[in-house]
View 1 (spheres, one colour):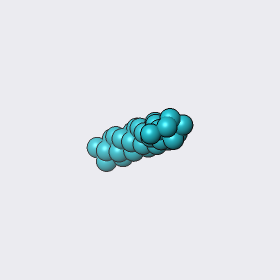
View 2 (cartoon, one colour):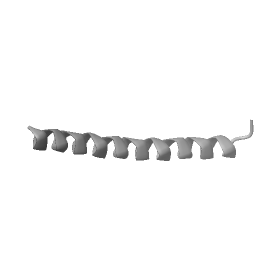
View 3 (cartoon, helix red, strand yellow):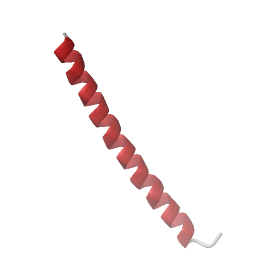
Length: 39
């Protein structure tokens, strides 16, 4: 049971890290587009 909990935690951490990285890239791209266009 303990090993299963560790595995689940590792999977959740991995998925969270991946989605956070994706969000960072998306925000970066959004900000870049905003800077290129005149307000």
